[in-house]
Image (cartoon, rainbow, N blue to C red; front, side, top):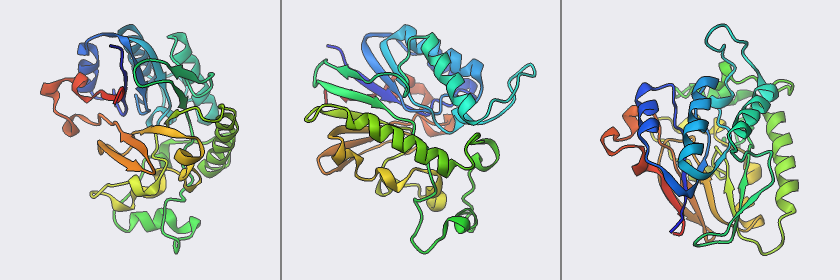
Length: 274
């Protein structure tokens, strides 16, 4: 029986994670959703895309913040930034037949279906913060309790003036496309960041929330008839329910955050059938 599976946050900068990827068995009848943070370097991204495309019948990918970091490539290659880097990642994924947020939505007709799979690239706009904290204060507010995000150094939103503006543009485009899905169709929404602030549980860094999404999406599971919403980013694997929708955080994470003796296959989340 074919299955729809999901994972995120492969973080292939780690040799242990790269080794686990190579040792992953084939699931030739299954589809896989990869919800971002594959790697910072293009050679590691290509390794992931080539490996996963060879092990699964179909693969979906959305970018995470680490994928978008503007860092020099080995050998002196230029550090691509912002939209240019994102489009290069999309082209790379397409080279391996992987479905991206820029491609037409696909429908899972296997067990538990049909469901329209909607890969989304939405970013964040710092709105996951207390109401009394102003936008211009939010980074300092987070730093007061030791929450610092490397995106402030490495994620260049060019040509947009800020991640807020890029996020707004991405949300508007996604809303337009999601609204075109036929009424009554069940969906699976896929984004690197959680769509709701009440799904964020990071005891080690409670003020990391500004880099975790946008309030604009808090009702999207209802608006767009989502049976399942898939995300990563938090490295806190869990399942939650809101309004009858199932929310799956599917991170693998850094080597210290998963049991390497079990192998990567143990961390593939079965999405459908339930």
